[in-house]
Image 1 (cartoon, rainbow, N blue to C red):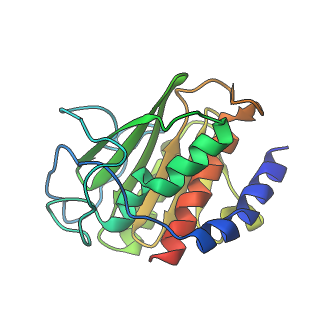
Image 2 (image 1 turned 60 degrees about the vertical axis):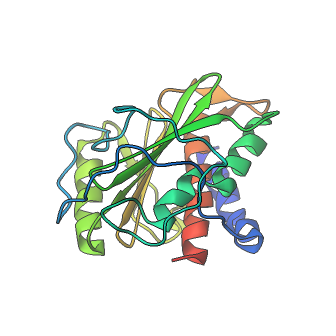
Length: 216
């Protein structure tokens, strides 16, 4: 069933590419200058500076995205995780009547968008490394530290290094980005179709990756 869900989500990328991808919405809080390189994750299964530290008041549908990566904030690509396409995909999968509230956070080269669902928080984060090699090093460290990490192989990984965890996380590395969709705070199944949190994390990941393919 898991592999079938992966295949269906991969096929859905074509429709996402045709629809186009908006940058992002919401203000960005807790701005800090990125380091010269990316260090390894501090603890198993987590991404540095992901969470709700600092004052966070970014909302879906707000400010215009910044142009490119800079010490003042995340790149347009990172901002897409809080944009229209992931939101539309999430509301469609879960058959939500309205868009969930979102809060975003930028610190230590990591942009995090938290979607506040009735069942719990869904965190989507992007670690921006200085180059693809540094991003791969960071990805490998995350995978080594993650509990019950399983590589995503074949067509399901869309040609990128990827893995998932039993508790509902999907992690992909593309270029100098490491994308982490963390649904571990959610129930095992959600929505009218009882989609698993792992399938939800995977489908949101492929939606964002499709945006990145269209707008590298």
